[in-house]
Image 1 (tube, rainbow, N blue to C red):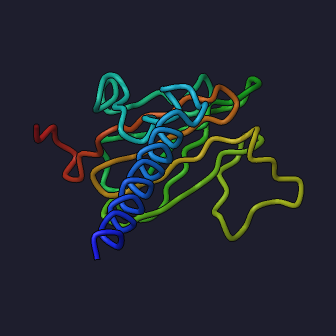
Image 2 (cartoon, rainbow, N blue to C red):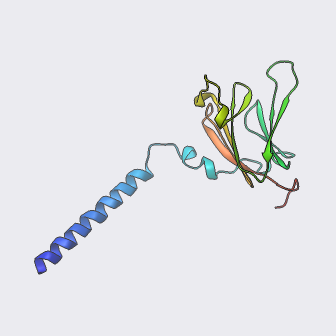
Image 3 (cartoon, helix red, strand yellow):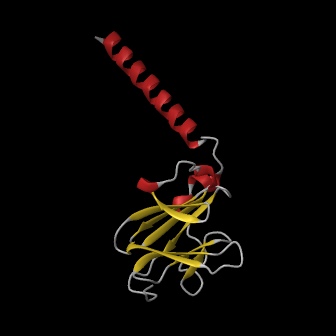
Length: 149
């Protein structure tokens, strides 16, 4: 009877040590800290400047509009383009690739995620990840068009 308790105790200790070791390995996944927290790291300023949040030099998100909206800066002398998606209360994920906004179900054949920006409109938050710069953060989306902080 005592022998069975020792075996059970030993098995429990081995199990707990292996679980602890596994948790430690997962903590140190080899990814830089900024990759681990991009989804929970706010962009600065959190509402964008004047309701416009910079994603990179060519792409900007509008944070104080009733729709999911982006501005794509022209790469030549042409005019900037504005993209409007669903209502701001509806979730939507889009990709900016080769200067155009693409929905997930309509990506071009030459699509390359490594050369894209992913924008996830999630109601109050607009999460962004730029695969070229390997940076990401989120803006707050004022659904009413007003700063409600």
